[in-house]
View 1 (tube, helix red, strand yellow):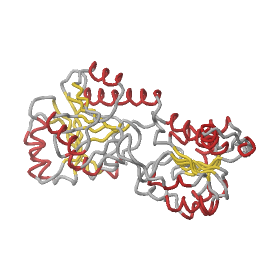
View 2 (tube, helix red, strand yellow):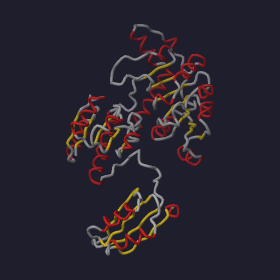
View 3 (cartoon, helix red, strand yellow):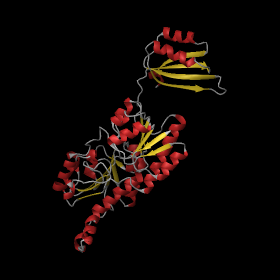
View 4 (cartoon, helix red, strand yellow):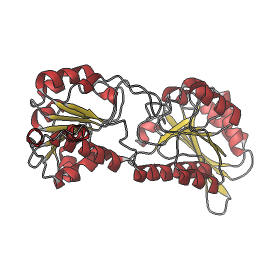
Length: 404
């Protein structure tokens, strides 16, 4: 199997892919048209990317069957185009959670103790202990979390170590679950903003989270509170944040930005950084050796499982609810042509097969096929199926609503 890696990827991961029998094509700098050409020319079946954008043109360029985002978010991949072509998109959730949580707390500490300004003055030969002795301290302050997925949950024990109670909001967070993880549940993001002395955002970028943190949220925050975003830039209305910084004294620590350069280096419009109350890092949340090794190992696991079973774990673009309405269950002798005859009759009736599986019993003498259909087969179709093969033992049709 050919695996095209179109971003920097750990050598240990490339070696592991080779050990399981993959031909690894390493093109870490391939972007845009060059990547589309590489997909076409190499005939790769699997594409591995980190920050590289995967467009419709790339997905249509060759014979890809699987795209792996070597990280958690997959907003840089045209998932809709992949779904249209039957290409699986998989990610590596949770493998960078510790790294991102560590950076979020580094930003919080840096805001409180004004570490970047301390360092900048020292590098200029300026000693200003009187100015930089002013800090609030984190102990007893309330940390608010927007999102309690893998990264958000990693924030909780770190907050506890600093003596910070935690309040949180997530669409899926229940009161019982909040109690289990040791946080106080809030009904809305704005309630978190009103309660917390520092807020950290940890949600995936989805249509429902784009612009989630806007003017109403910042208006609810305490004046001078800390705001951290290490998730995705599009989750936050940057103009509203800039206004909150200038008018309400909000102090922000950011790792993600709306106008990030596409590559690893380039010019960057200062924007928010004209205000000393804003500090930032270069979208490096997941960039620790520990995180990258874990992501590398998970990528190899995905490829191995796909090679062995034809199914990849962590696929994000499978239909959550199949359009199938009925299940045709066929018990049959395990002989050549039985299912071919069944499918011929289903096709002749104009019925679409949504999913199917065939499970063979011990001894390989009999099997059961479970065929998901988009409509109920008529009695004459079932009779035609029975007549089509003497190897059918029994057959039934089950409405899927009743199965649920």
